[in-house]
Amino acid sequence: MKYLFVGLIFCFLLLLGNPQPALASIHKYPESATQVMYRSQQSLRDDRDRAWQLILFKRLNNGQLDSLHLRLVGFPGTTEVARTQPLKITARSREAWTATNLVEPLELPANVGEYDLLKIMTQLDADFPLQLELSLQQGQLAKLLVPPFVVREWRSLMDKVDIQL
Image (cartoon, rainbow, N blue to C red; front, side, top):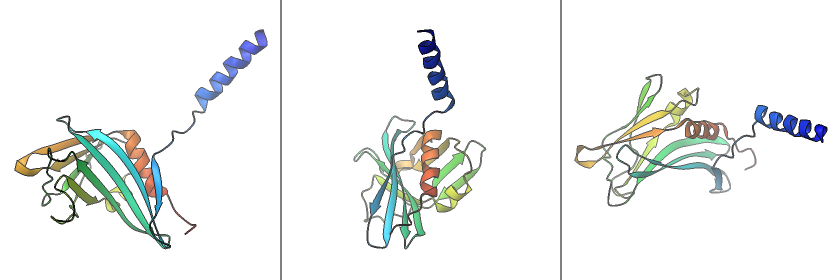
């Protein structure tokens, strides 16, 4: 009995010392014979408790990185993105970036903004939280805090490579 107890404690300590990696919610979508998309989707609330979907997706074409976009989707009827305004991103280190909205006015609903994050993501070297400031119509702002586990997933998505096209 004594050895069983010691064995259980040993196993418990091993698990604490070697935590299993969390399962990321990165999904792969083949779009054609030569193109594949990887996507991370998270739900967050802004500073006014409005729900947002944050969808980071990258496309590989013939195994080469084609694009990396962040799509922000607010609840229809409650948010309208000011598409002429950039997305502002601030890191804990006070580094700041802006990303231009890529959506044309009639392409997607008014509650959707899409931004090129390739340059920004290549500059992130740690899983620090990010603050996003999204301009809305009527001069409002939506501030979203992106927690470290989401940044970690986004950085992991950057590392995904598809060699079996």
